[in-house]
Length: 517
Image 1: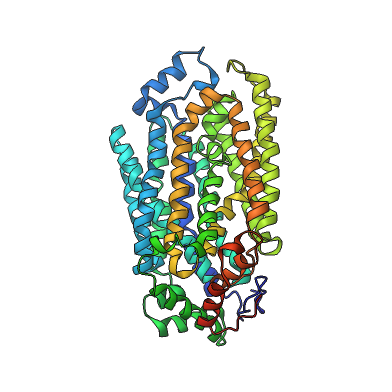
Image 2: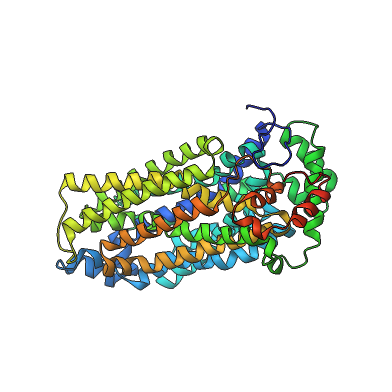
């Protein structure tokens, strides 16, 4: 892999080092934590479009779909019980992320990943063997706990292991695995829907044990990050690990910075109270609004319910699942483009381009549905018309997959200083999961009542978030993770929250002159 000095655009210190094979494989294994989240997103939408699954657990929805041919296309799947099945996971993940914060800080990042994988595995077994709705939802809650732990620890692990100049690329490995998990789930749903006997949904749900086993076993072989080792008092191990992951003996500057950050973090007895301090206001606001906005792009509407949505568009059962496979492939390849460009173009350019692309394509989907279905919901799509809908959905997915998808996890994981990092990442995950829960719970009802205007509703939010990024998100590419305070101090708006004393104190602790400004 290419080596060389780290390019630092934030005004701080350059750390020598390169991307070693050891770091690449450690980050690859850790990123597989995204598989469990992605697999669930893909699988839940697929099984809820399978007739045998609906007939067994949600007979009211099944009857509405099969017997009432006059039912409004927008309202065919409107069932709160059905959405509880999907969204219960995200409520459980929200609560679990707060527990995961303590585990991640006290025991290390890898054990949080291991715990998440094991609990997810148990939930997958329970879902695959489900006899009633209660058993189904209990399994979903366990899956949610697993997702909460993995989503809390994996992005932090990746950001801490990666050299600063390649942090974006390695961190987006998490989102790449999410998209790969979604694609695998879509392909599995497409295959299991054809199983005669009506038990294909059991295979789809039970196969979640595979990604769970991958992260559970893989995490046992992961090294701890130097940041975590220092935080837990293992200074010599941290120094040895830093030499290994940077591929050089010249690690003293970075090591001293990590020790200084750790010493500062030990002064913080209550990180949840400390994060409310004025000097952390930029990180807190960004850490809340980015996951909030990520869910209001409308992406989970597409990914959760892609098969259901395509059925509403008039596709047949097989065709709807195949369309979901197509969007899954687009999602995976567009995320890969983000991996290749994020450390060259930076975070802001991808955010802004993705926002414009999503707005245009989302508006076109809304217009096309309005023309054919109107407000009555009565109508059918021709093959050519359906093709246009899928095209614009794919353009939308591409825009999300190289912007808000990966960057929604990357940016919050790299902006918090060590003393509040676990708490900050928990806030990021919990906000993400809460609004994922709200959107998942409300989507089918919103589709029934807002009809095609739902796409304009999300489009309006895309305008708001794109303006927010343009005005309030500074560029963070290439900035060492423990020197991010310099970025906020230079920003036209956030600088008012960071005093010169805050920057001076941090520079003194890290052995640097206060000459950045």
